[in-house]
Every structure is written in structure tokens, then in C-alpha cells.
Image (cartoon, rainbow over all chains, first blue to last red; front, side, top):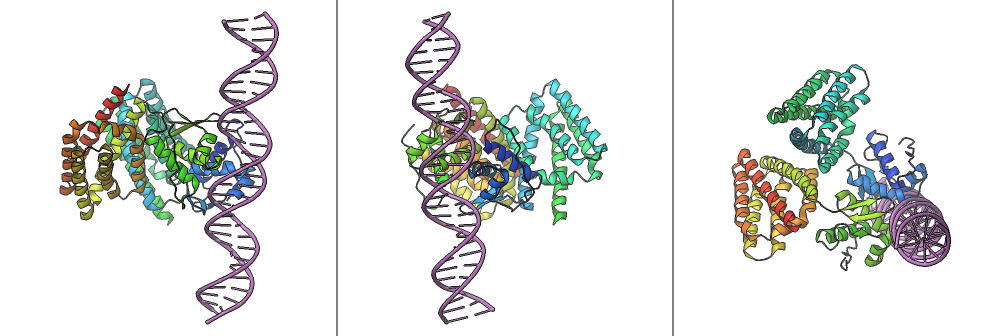
Length: 223
Length: 223
DNA sequence: CTTATGTTTTTTGTATACAATAGTGATGAT
DNA sequence: ATCATCACTATTGTATACAAAAAACATAAG
């Protein structure tokens, strides 16, 4: 484990600060799957007491980022290939759902944002910054998610994305896929522009399935 | 608020016992939407300290059953008509997904269970016990969920169901719908028996949409 | 050498104490 | 009467103390 430092923010309760800190540490891989989350160790490392640590762990649990066994403590959740498949399966269905809802509700402004986001993604493929690229991709999909005007769905989808995060960044390193991704985004934007639900659903499906199979490959190769 | 009593269970940590107790109290309506969850009050009522109460609240938060404002405490989450719509939208998509996955994976044994569950539901419509009927319906759908062999999906679906619980029981009181429900279950069973994904998706969609519109009506009439 | 048993240490679970903030009500000025 | 201010109370946030369980280790018996 790395040196983990508290994301200072005077206004949030410590439990939230600790939660954010641990969450990010897990996502960026500083805390590795299976690694124990020991209260005392974390507390002294972050300079707080066990209380906010424990509450943060309860929160991580719910996000699927930690698993705790009673009287044995918490661990960073691992993700097996099967887990990944399970998440991908759900995300595919909900991504398509989001696209369908968004297709009906999307405003002209949001459509502009979407096109901009697609452009930005395209730009980012030219630079060599995977992190930025991932961000641009998130932004693109967030425009769609937000257009659904369904906070519970938005929340769910971002939670699912979070669970895939570690591998997603990995697979975005494969530059040979960039053209494909750009084209898929383009098709999706067109789907929204023409409000053609059939085409949109199809291209969204294609997009998430492509991502899914790429990620499957990443996780396979890692083993 | 009613007299709330601890679900004794010597093996689980108190936080889990408290969580279950509060969860059930919320679902059965003993704790009403908007009602404050005051730590000290709950602690003395349940005969435990604030610590497990606080952790249970963090857990309820994640299930969407409680909402907390920093330094102001937690409340039982309310559910507006819009919230309900949002949940129904998601559940529809995931229920169909579950049916599709289950259709491929369902074993002969599970198929028998499914038919039995449908029978049991039918039986329950004859007696006048809404609670039992709701249970039978849950069982029917659980057979399908479990057949997906996707724990994350199963978890999600049961969480969504939980959020609808209060209204679901309400709408099952309308006896005029029973025949329809029985027929829909029958169609779904047949879909699984013939492994016809098209028909199955269709009848599942019909089923959840029927439920959805009935629940919309319930919530409207309540206002 | 392996297993069983007892002891110590570590770690989690729960209660309590103290601090800080938000809410409430009384008092007084305008 | 209305509003402002202050004191007091109620409530949440955080730290710590103590209890109980699990893990680690050592020692003794077979």
C-alpha cells in the first residue's frame, strides 16, 4: 500500500473524506484487491480515529469496493473474470436503456455537449495520455446518462463504471482500437441527432459489446 | 414510530441486526418517509449504543432507504412518484435482462421450481392473505433471478424490489388483477419451457409493465 | 514431526466520553 | 408585535476505552 493521504476538505464529515480517499486509492490501484483494510493502520495513516474509518468502510462495502467478513475485517474487493462478466452484462442492459431514455429526452443543448464530448475524445486519442482519454470517454457517456433525468439510473451506471474502472483504463491503452471507438461514438451521436431509436440502440449495443470483449481480453491476458 | 424491537441474532454483529431491524421497519411502514432517525432515540429503543446505529444508518443510506444530511442526521427516504417511475424504468430493463439470461441457463430442476412457484401463486390468490401472495410472487421471480447465476444482478434486482415494496403490497390488494397476473406468470413459464427468448422477453415485458402501471395508479390514488 | 492445548497479541465490536454544531426558547431593544 | 441576541439544549461528529473474538505463537504430548 502506498502512502495514502487525506483529501482535505474542511466541510465534509471525516467519514466522507476518508471514504473518498479510500475509494480513490482502490480505484487507482494503490490499495490492491484482497488487501486488508485494517482500521487501526488506516486510522493512524490518515491521522483520524477508527470511528470515521469504520463508517467509510461500511460505505465502501455498499459500492462493492470492499468486502467485510464479520469479526475478520474488511478487504479490498477482488474482481474475478466472472465478476467482470456479471457487471458487464448489467451495464450493457442499462447503457442501452439509458440511451433509449436519453434519446427521447435529450435537449438540443445536451446534443451539442454530446458532439463536443465526442470531438474531445477524438482529440485525446492523438495525445498520449490514457488518463485524459478515459476522462473524455466518461464525459461522453455522462452526457447521455445525465440526459436520462433518472438519478437512480445515473447513480447505478456510475457505480458500475467504477467497478470496471481498473480494467477500463488498461484496455484504453490499446491504440489500435481508437479508430473503432471514435467511429462508434460518431454513430451514437448520429443516432441521437436523428432520434432514431433503433439505430441508436444498435450502435450503443455494439459500442458496449466492443468494450466488453476488449476488457475480457485484457483480463485474460493479465492472468 | 412503533415500538421497534431488535431482531435477535446472536451471531451477526449488532450493526447488521440493527440494519435488518430498521430496514424491515421502514419497509413495513413503521418508520415513515421523512421520519428522523435519531441515533440516541434508536439506540435506547433498541438497547444498544450509538455506534452500531450509526453504522446501520450508513448501510441504509446505500440501499436508498435513508438519506442523511451532514450534521443534521438521517431520515427515512421518501419516494415520490418520480422516484418510483425511475425505479420502475430500471427494474423493467433488468427484469427482462434477467429473463433472457435465465432462459439460457435455467436447469430442468429450476424449471420445475418455477412452475411450482407459479402454482403456489395461483393458490394464494384464492386465500385472502396479501402478505402470503406477495411472498409467493417474490418466490416466483426469485427462481428466475437465481437462475441467472449473476449475484450482482440478483442483488440489484432485490434491492430495486425492496424500494418498491411498500407500494407493491398495496397494489396486490386489487383482486381484479389476479387473473391477469396468473396468466402472465403462465406465459412466462411457457416461455422458459419452450426456451423461446422472443416470447419470453415479450411476456416478461408485459408483466412488469402491467405491474408498473398498476403501481402508478396506486401511488396516484394515494395522493 | 505432528497435533493439541494454552497463552499472548492483534484486531474487530461496542460503549462511552468529549467536542462541535444546529436547533430552541427566553430576553430585551426597537 | 417583530426581530436580534444570547444562553441553553439536543443532536451529530469524533476520539477513546473497554470487551470479545480471532490469529499467532509457543509449548507439551503423542
